[in-house]
Length: 261
Image (cartoon, rainbow, N blue to C red; front, side, top):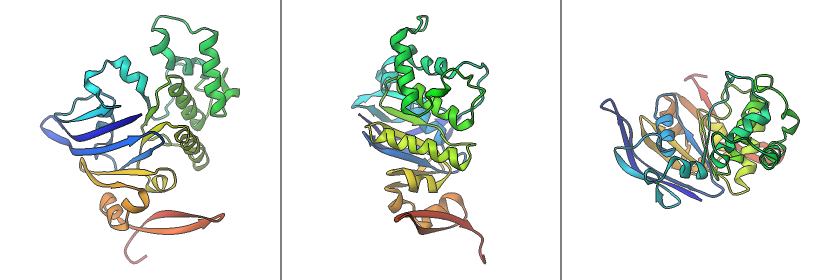
């Protein structure tokens, strides 16, 4: 299972939003797409999902040009998990997860016992089976993000593209969601997620793509690519990178500071 982005550029209203972007990800990879607001992360994701067609370059999904594939074929390979938000309708958690199976059972078909069993298995895998009958507006932000992740699992796609999966979550819920994401990568899923937070990339990703003004500023292993110089340039701020040890494990930590502090 792989996705390869080769030298893509995208222009919107005569403004180049992405310039000559290349990267690849395969089974088991957790890739953090890092950068401040407005650097092209959302446009980059829309291109990888086949929603936007770059003016130059190509995107290959398991070796096939994504723009030669039907929407249904792409959906069998890639699942998109948006930021958690309050839904307009208070569907139950189980019904929301079942919506991820539309591509398999048809838009106007009703899920049967087999589909419900699959949906419950996804909820159990993510540790939220007890929420199945709850309304999705009656659960926490972290639980809602795990619900959206379960919906993507029943889609049976092995590439997960996640837009800031821990946005607006507290520290505990954020850690819980990222640990679940990490466990999926160990099962062979490819996970690509956007984030503003370099410490999240240090802790959970094995690859990082840092975007600045629509260009790749750095790419590679987080501990190698995210130097103090790169992070300071990326965020237009002084950034120090330090190592801390917790329970015998060493973590890298990025800290923004003012001169003189």
